[in-house]
Length: 251
Image 1 (cartoon, rainbow, N blue to C red):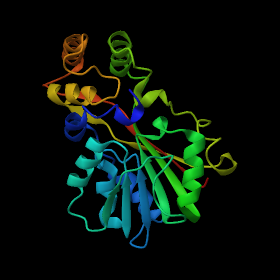
Image 2 (cartoon, one colour):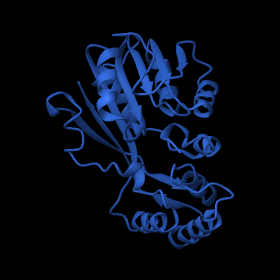
Image 3 (tube, one colour):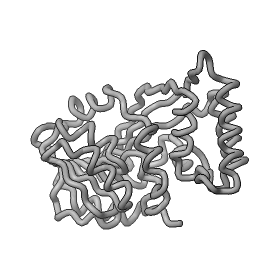
Image 4 (cartoon, one colour):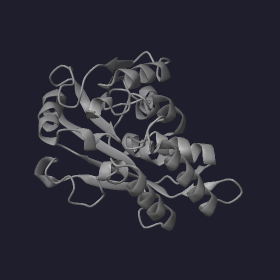
């Protein structure tokens, strides 16, 4: 299955259980990066519109570029209340947007799916002079005991698992070949999640690597997630340590 189709059967869980982004991150975009009512944004790999929805009322125009039909339809419905919002059937490598048409590009939870070289060429084509790219991930705190055990579970049960957030990691050298002169601004925001059993399982099933209902290892995945939840939860809630990491620069 190519990356475009990986989430086709996960839209419902994605909508219900994926985390949002903290207010501090949105404030950073407005107060330090200059997102404003004059800004035109391309949210590329927009998915179901989690970030697009947070930005739409703060900018002049937002294009939610998403290649997967099911995800794009969910995004359109989620953001239908904004008249400055448009979904676009396009990809990071071929957005379909005009030359020099946007002030900022945002990429939330999606950059690890892109062809880095081709997307860089496309981003340069659609960005206006001095435009910037914002890469952002919600990422689990890997040193935490619960997260370590969750990682081992996924490696044991999910053949496609290579690490949370596509195994992208969060080292300072990760994007030096993407941003201009290797320079970018890195920020970390607290975004811990407190989840019920339903939310924990639903969030886990929304991942690209998670088995789908009917797969041979689906029930094993559910059962082991339940055991792990019961081990680490208190009063029906588990704390999933999470940080929002952003990387911003010119390209």
